Length: 220
Image (tube, rainbow, N blue to C red):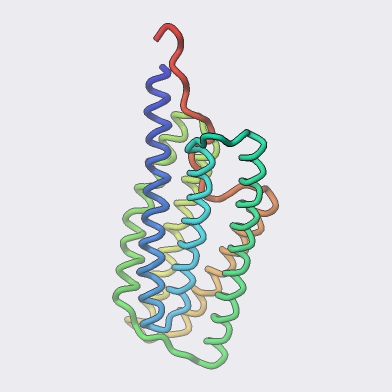
């Protein structure tokens, strides 16, 4: 593979990461709004997960996008701090979603049906699988384990979107309001898993290409 091809693939990896972060920010805002309007902890938890994912992805874009004036040791130190921040953010959000889910179940707080929330879930189900495929193929071409791992994280988000759609659909179609809190509990478990893994492995779930763009050879 030529240096020019590698550079193109690396640029594509960064663009995919930029898109992932941008989409998660939009998804977060819409999901939180829908969750607030409907009183849905599943939607709120889904939005908070998108917030944590966008924070994670932004750190990796910063890490692999290149920085002027920072030594490798300084970059590593700042990255470690950022990883701990993201990990504890996941765990903090998990505690909130877990508490709210159990609280709503116990006090029988019935969320309103949310067509906006279902639209968010459907959009994610359409976009995330395609994004997974692009990331995986690019990561495989680059021989980048981090980007391939990130593609699997994107696929996991798609499955979470499916769970959200099922929960919202059960409430909308059949009035099974408990499904909303059950999906909230599922999202809380997902957040705990991500937070624990991030802190234990000191790696973020959102990854850009783990290699700098190749420099053209002297003869090119």
